[in-house]
Length: 405
Image 1 (cartoon, rainbow, N blue to C red):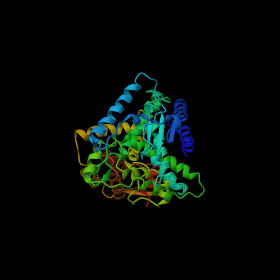
Image 2: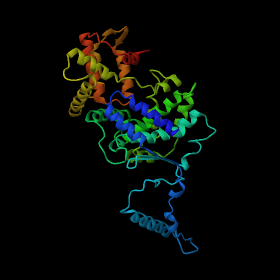
Image 3: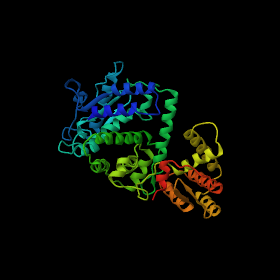
Image 4: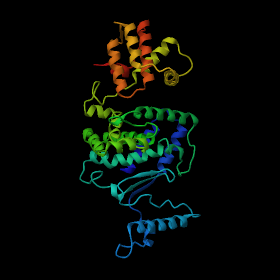
C-alpha cells in the first residue's frame, strides 16, 4: 500500500499545472528517497538503551518518582553518548507499541509502528475500501507531510534546503493561504473556532491523504465510496469536555477531529456523488467563491489592468480587507443598502435568471462556510455595480452551478 501511494503521488506531482518541470523533478526525487519504517526495527536495530535502567518495586525501596528519575538518567546518558557520532537514521522515533505514525522531515522518512497496524485502522478481514479509509489514510497523510508548508523546506536527505523555483514557491504559498481560509473560523464544537494558520501543515496532510486514497479507490472495479468515506470518518471519532476542546483549539497543530472529516471530504467530487449532496445541503461547498466570480466580471467590465485574474482578485481582496479593517461596516447593513438600490432588478446570464433574492441566498451560504466579511462586503458592492449597469456578464460553469436549483 505504501509503494502504491508513492506511485500515485508521483503521478499527481507530474500532473500539477502550477509547478515547473524543474521543481517537479526535485519533488519526485524526494519522494523516491523517502525512508519507510513499518511495524518494528530490523533485528540489529532494536533500541536496548533501557536495559540499563534499574527499576525497583516499593518492596525493594523504590517509588514511581524514583523510577522515573532513573529512566530520565539513562535516557540522558544515551543521548550524551550519541554526541559527536554520525547520525544514525536506523533509530526509530516511535515505540513499536505506539498507536500513531509520523513523518520526520530531518530524515525524510515515514514511520508506522505495529501499534497502529491493527483494527480498526487495519484488518486483513476488512474490505479494500475499509483499509484505504483506515490505515491508508494515515499512510497517505504522513507522505503528504513531506510536501506541506513545513516539509517543503527540507530536501530529499532531510537537510534544510530551498529546492523550489521562486515562482513555484510563490504559487505554493498562495495555495496554502486558500487552505488557511478554508479552515479558519470553522467550528469543531459550538463556539470553538479552528485556527487556519496554526493547523495548516496537518490540514494539508489531511487533504492530500484524502485525494490519494480516493484515487487508489478509483482504480478498483465498482469501488464503494460510501464505505471508504465512512471509514475515514470513524477514524476521527472522539469525545472530550468543552474545556479540553477550547484548550486544544489554541495549541494543537491538528484541526478538531470533526473538521478532519467534514472540511476534508467536501473537497472531493466523489463524496458529493456517493451521498447525493447538492446546493442547499449542509455539507455543500460551492465550486467557486461567488464574490470572486463577481470580482472577475467587474474587473473585465472596468478593464482592470496589470495581471491575470487570480492575481488580480487576490490583490483586490487584500486592498478590500485593509479598507474593511480600517472602516468596519457590517456586511448586513451593506447588503440592505444594495438591495434597496437594486430593487427588483433582474437580468439573465446564459439563460439563468439572476435576481437579488438568489444572490442573497448564495451569499448566506458563503457566510455559513466562513467566507471573510470583507469578501462578502465587496461581493455585494460588485453585485450592485453589475445590476445598476445592467452588465451582461458571462458566468463560468461553476458559477452557474452555484446558482442552480
